[in-house]
Image (cartoon, rainbow, N blue to C red; front, side):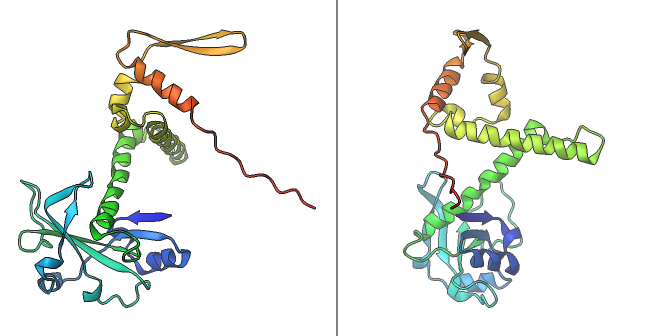
Length: 244
Protein backbone atom coordinates (compact mmCIF):
# COMPACT_ATOMS: atom_id res chain seq x y z
CA UNK A 1 0.00 0.00 0.00
CA UNK A 2 1.30 3.44 -0.96
CA UNK A 3 0.15 6.64 0.77
CA UNK A 4 0.71 9.88 -1.15
CA UNK A 5 -0.12 13.40 0.03
CA UNK A 6 1.08 16.92 -0.55
CA UNK A 7 3.02 18.93 2.03
CA UNK A 8 0.04 19.03 4.40
CA UNK A 9 0.82 15.41 5.31
CA UNK A 10 4.41 16.16 6.35
CA UNK A 11 3.78 16.17 10.10
CA UNK A 12 5.64 14.12 12.68
CA UNK A 13 2.48 12.46 13.99
CA UNK A 14 1.22 11.43 10.56
CA UNK A 15 4.58 10.24 9.27
CA UNK A 16 5.30 8.27 12.43
CA UNK A 17 1.87 6.69 12.16
CA UNK A 18 2.59 5.57 8.58
CA UNK A 19 5.93 4.20 9.71
CA UNK A 20 4.25 2.24 12.51
CA UNK A 21 1.74 0.81 10.02
CA UNK A 22 4.61 -0.35 7.78
CA UNK A 23 3.12 1.16 4.63
CA UNK A 24 4.99 2.89 1.83
CA UNK A 25 4.62 6.65 1.65
CA UNK A 26 5.49 9.56 -0.61
CA UNK A 27 4.78 12.85 1.15
CA UNK A 28 5.46 16.43 0.06
CA UNK A 29 8.24 17.89 2.19
CA UNK A 30 8.92 21.55 3.00
CA UNK A 31 12.59 22.34 2.63
CA UNK A 32 14.39 24.44 5.28
CA UNK A 33 15.29 28.09 4.83
CA UNK A 34 18.93 27.30 4.09
CA UNK A 35 18.05 25.15 1.08
CA UNK A 36 20.01 27.42 -1.26
CA UNK A 37 23.21 26.71 0.64
CA UNK A 38 22.44 22.99 0.77
CA UNK A 39 21.98 22.80 -2.99
CA UNK A 40 25.31 24.51 -3.58
CA UNK A 41 27.03 21.61 -1.82
CA UNK A 42 25.60 19.09 -4.32
CA UNK A 43 27.83 18.59 -7.38
CA UNK A 44 26.15 18.92 -10.75
CA UNK A 45 27.08 15.33 -11.54
CA UNK A 46 24.83 14.13 -8.70
CA UNK A 47 21.68 15.58 -10.25
CA UNK A 48 19.86 13.02 -12.39
CA UNK A 49 17.51 14.01 -15.23
CA UNK A 50 13.86 13.85 -14.17
CA UNK A 51 11.04 12.23 -16.11
CA UNK A 52 7.90 13.71 -17.58
CA UNK A 53 4.42 12.23 -17.17
CA UNK A 54 5.13 9.67 -19.91
CA UNK A 55 8.27 8.38 -18.22
CA UNK A 56 10.58 10.08 -20.71
CA UNK A 57 13.51 12.31 -19.77
CA UNK A 58 12.33 15.88 -19.22
CA UNK A 59 14.72 18.54 -20.44
CA UNK A 60 15.51 21.17 -17.82
CA UNK A 61 14.52 19.12 -14.76
CA UNK A 62 16.72 17.13 -12.37
CA UNK A 63 16.39 15.16 -9.12
CA UNK A 64 18.83 14.45 -6.28
CA UNK A 65 18.71 13.04 -2.77
CA UNK A 66 19.12 15.44 0.17
CA UNK A 67 18.76 12.97 3.03
CA UNK A 68 22.35 13.19 4.25
CA UNK A 69 22.30 17.01 4.22
CA UNK A 70 19.23 17.48 6.42
CA UNK A 71 18.63 17.18 10.14
CA UNK A 72 15.88 14.54 10.24
CA UNK A 73 15.79 14.15 14.01
CA UNK A 74 12.28 13.18 15.10
CA UNK A 75 11.28 11.92 11.68
CA UNK A 76 10.70 8.18 11.05
CA UNK A 77 13.70 5.93 10.70
CA UNK A 78 14.56 5.20 7.08
CA UNK A 79 12.92 8.36 5.72
CA UNK A 80 14.56 9.84 2.64
CA UNK A 81 14.16 13.33 1.16
CA UNK A 82 14.39 13.73 -2.60
CA UNK A 83 14.45 17.12 -4.31
CA UNK A 84 13.52 18.19 -7.82
CA UNK A 85 14.69 21.36 -9.52
CA UNK A 86 13.43 22.55 -12.88
CA UNK A 87 13.03 25.56 -15.05
CA UNK A 88 9.52 27.05 -14.58
CA UNK A 89 7.10 26.79 -17.46
CA UNK A 90 7.13 29.76 -19.86
CA UNK A 91 5.14 32.59 -18.32
CA UNK A 92 5.11 31.09 -14.82
CA UNK A 93 5.86 33.48 -11.98
CA UNK A 94 8.85 32.68 -9.78
CA UNK A 95 8.18 32.14 -6.07
CA UNK A 96 10.20 33.39 -3.11
CA UNK A 97 11.35 29.81 -2.51
CA UNK A 98 12.73 29.41 -6.03
CA UNK A 99 16.51 29.38 -6.28
CA UNK A 100 18.64 30.77 -9.13
CA UNK A 101 15.62 30.85 -11.41
CA UNK A 102 14.86 27.17 -10.77
CA UNK A 103 11.77 25.83 -9.02
CA UNK A 104 12.74 23.47 -6.20
CA UNK A 105 10.35 21.02 -4.56
CA UNK A 106 10.90 17.95 -2.41
CA UNK A 107 9.15 14.91 -1.01
CA UNK A 108 9.83 12.33 1.70
CA UNK A 109 9.65 8.60 1.13
CA UNK A 110 10.62 5.36 2.83
CA UNK A 111 11.46 3.59 -0.43
CA UNK A 112 14.55 1.45 0.10
CA UNK A 113 17.53 2.59 -2.00
CA UNK A 114 18.18 0.20 -4.85
CA UNK A 115 14.93 -1.70 -4.36
CA UNK A 116 12.37 1.08 -4.37
CA UNK A 117 13.36 2.36 -7.81
CA UNK A 118 15.68 5.03 -9.18
CA UNK A 119 15.26 8.64 -8.05
CA UNK A 120 13.47 9.77 -11.26
CA UNK A 121 11.03 6.85 -10.89
CA UNK A 122 10.25 7.73 -7.27
CA UNK A 123 9.82 11.41 -8.13
CA UNK A 124 7.47 10.59 -11.03
CA UNK A 125 5.49 8.26 -8.76
CA UNK A 126 5.07 11.10 -6.27
CA UNK A 127 3.96 13.67 -8.86
CA UNK A 128 1.31 11.31 -10.18
CA UNK A 129 -0.63 11.92 -6.97
CA UNK A 130 -1.89 15.03 -8.79
CA UNK A 131 -4.56 12.73 -10.25
CA UNK A 132 -6.53 13.33 -7.07
CA UNK A 133 -6.75 17.02 -7.98
CA UNK A 134 -8.22 16.00 -11.33
CA UNK A 135 -10.82 13.90 -9.51
CA UNK A 136 -11.70 16.84 -7.26
CA UNK A 137 -12.20 19.05 -10.32
CA UNK A 138 -14.32 16.36 -11.96
CA UNK A 139 -16.45 16.01 -8.85
CA UNK A 140 -17.03 19.76 -8.84
CA UNK A 141 -18.18 19.53 -12.45
CA UNK A 142 -20.58 16.78 -11.40
CA UNK A 143 -22.29 19.01 -8.83
CA UNK A 144 -20.00 19.45 -5.85
CA UNK A 145 -19.32 23.07 -6.74
CA UNK A 146 -22.57 24.18 -5.13
CA UNK A 147 -24.67 22.88 -2.27
CA UNK A 148 -28.27 23.16 -3.55
CA UNK A 149 -30.16 22.16 -0.40
CA UNK A 150 -31.06 24.14 2.71
CA UNK A 151 -30.06 21.93 5.65
CA UNK A 152 -26.56 20.78 6.53
CA UNK A 153 -27.62 17.12 6.76
CA UNK A 154 -29.29 17.30 3.34
CA UNK A 155 -26.11 18.66 1.78
CA UNK A 156 -24.14 15.90 3.49
CA UNK A 157 -26.29 13.37 1.65
CA UNK A 158 -25.80 15.34 -1.56
CA UNK A 159 -22.01 15.20 -1.14
CA UNK A 160 -22.12 11.46 -0.39
CA UNK A 161 -24.12 10.83 -3.58
CA UNK A 162 -21.66 12.88 -5.63
CA UNK A 163 -18.71 11.03 -4.11
CA UNK A 164 -20.35 7.74 -5.07
CA UNK A 165 -20.98 9.04 -8.59
CA UNK A 166 -17.32 10.07 -8.85
CA UNK A 167 -16.20 6.58 -7.79
CA UNK A 168 -18.51 4.96 -10.33
CA UNK A 169 -17.18 7.14 -13.15
CA UNK A 170 -13.57 6.47 -12.16
CA UNK A 171 -14.04 2.69 -12.03
CA UNK A 172 -16.07 2.74 -15.24
CA UNK A 173 -13.20 4.40 -17.08
CA UNK A 174 -10.64 2.03 -15.55
CA UNK A 175 -12.55 -1.19 -16.18
CA UNK A 176 -14.83 -0.50 -19.15
CA UNK A 177 -13.07 2.23 -21.12
CA UNK A 178 -9.45 1.16 -20.71
CA UNK A 179 -7.45 1.58 -23.90
CA UNK A 180 -9.98 3.97 -25.48
CA UNK A 181 -10.05 7.72 -26.01
CA UNK A 182 -12.82 7.94 -23.41
CA UNK A 183 -10.47 6.70 -20.69
CA UNK A 184 -9.42 10.31 -19.93
CA UNK A 185 -12.65 12.12 -20.74
CA UNK A 186 -13.97 14.37 -18.01
CA UNK A 187 -17.65 14.54 -16.93
CA UNK A 188 -18.73 17.22 -19.41
CA UNK A 189 -17.44 15.25 -22.39
CA UNK A 190 -18.83 11.98 -21.02
CA UNK A 191 -22.26 13.58 -20.73
CA UNK A 192 -22.12 14.99 -24.26
CA UNK A 193 -20.88 11.83 -25.97
CA UNK A 194 -21.66 8.69 -23.99
CA UNK A 195 -24.47 9.47 -21.58
CA UNK A 196 -26.64 10.86 -24.40
CA UNK A 197 -26.39 7.85 -26.72
CA UNK A 198 -30.01 6.94 -27.58
CA UNK A 199 -31.02 3.48 -26.38
CA UNK A 200 -34.06 1.43 -25.50
CA UNK A 201 -34.58 -1.63 -23.33
CA UNK A 202 -36.58 -4.63 -24.46
CA UNK A 203 -37.71 -7.59 -22.36
CA UNK A 204 -38.27 -10.98 -23.91
CA UNK A 205 -38.08 -14.49 -22.51
CA UNK A 206 -37.10 -13.26 -19.05
CA UNK A 207 -34.15 -11.46 -20.63
CA UNK A 208 -33.59 -7.72 -20.75
CA UNK A 209 -31.73 -6.39 -23.76
CA UNK A 210 -30.31 -2.95 -24.43
CA UNK A 211 -30.65 -1.69 -28.01
CA UNK A 212 -28.29 1.14 -28.90
CA UNK A 213 -28.91 3.51 -31.78
CA UNK A 214 -26.70 2.28 -34.60
CA UNK A 215 -26.14 5.73 -36.06
CA UNK A 216 -25.12 7.39 -32.78
CA UNK A 217 -21.50 8.62 -33.17
CA UNK A 218 -20.20 7.04 -29.95
CA UNK A 219 -22.46 4.00 -29.68
CA UNK A 220 -19.56 1.67 -30.51
CA UNK A 221 -17.73 2.84 -27.38
CA UNK A 222 -20.71 1.97 -25.19
CA UNK A 223 -21.06 -1.43 -26.86
CA UNK A 224 -17.35 -2.20 -26.46
CA UNK A 225 -17.46 -1.07 -22.81
CA UNK A 226 -20.36 -3.40 -22.02
CA UNK A 227 -18.61 -6.29 -23.77
CA UNK A 228 -15.42 -5.61 -21.86
CA UNK A 229 -17.28 -5.64 -18.54
CA UNK A 230 -18.97 -8.92 -19.37
CA UNK A 231 -15.62 -10.57 -19.98
CA UNK A 232 -14.06 -9.42 -16.72
CA UNK A 233 -13.35 -12.16 -14.21
CA UNK A 234 -15.61 -11.86 -11.19
CA UNK A 235 -13.65 -11.47 -7.92
CA UNK A 236 -13.75 -14.60 -5.81
CA UNK A 237 -15.04 -14.29 -2.29
CA UNK A 238 -13.04 -15.88 0.53
CA UNK A 239 -14.63 -19.00 2.00
CA UNK A 240 -16.41 -18.47 5.29
CA UNK A 241 -14.95 -20.28 8.26
CA UNK A 242 -17.37 -22.76 9.83
CA UNK A 243 -17.15 -22.82 13.65
CA UNK A 244 -16.30 -26.19 15.20
